[in-house]
Image (tube, rainbow, N blue to C red):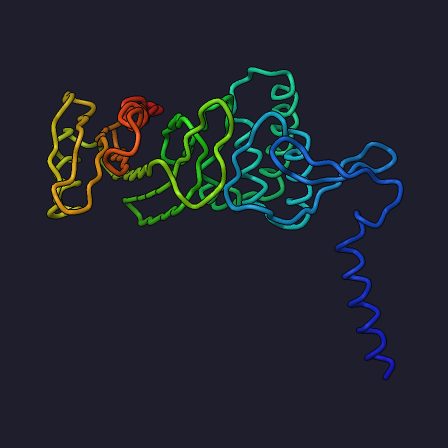
Length: 295
């Protein structure tokens, strides 16, 4: 009987602990511009949940206080990958605001502490902590620091799929994300996206000899496709094409093939035909402006 009572009391304490911030009379509730919820105690200290509340979060400057504090709590609660994504995203942002600069200083200190404490485990956590998302104005940046590329997208981004494969001499990452464009104000919610973007990145053991090797790799992977391509640009570093479907499902977009030493990239944008006149330019921009870190 005594053990049963003890377990009931322990359960109630755990439930009360989960809701403790909402119960504290001296604490202030706060919701920032990114929709994050946290609390200030009477001494001005920020309290967050310390639990992962999202898989891929687009960070903006308005939520910096939350993200720094949440990172600290995630590390304490043994969520290294989730905390590392927040730290790396803050450090990836352009130093365009004093709040970002101050937050990057704190993030850098947290990153160094994590490297010291985790030791040999850090590299494994780091490889899982990508992509990184942040927004400035109406542009969301998608940064893949492991595969050395970034994209600026005019809208709100939702990661739909993120696949990794790795062997001794090969590494692959494929990311698919949906985009809701922003025109002056944030787009309304819902399931519909204005366009989809897919990026496939491959890292080989030896440098890619010529761009045509990646082009052949693309065609081998996709097989027969009911699309018509029109080449816009072709050189030693990239091939950019527009394409349109020939089947009953009418869609169109742009495709870019890039090479960077041992790394090869294929980026595709896609949208239904005829829905919006401004879509061709929006679809073209990420393909033409894919940023690659030279290695």
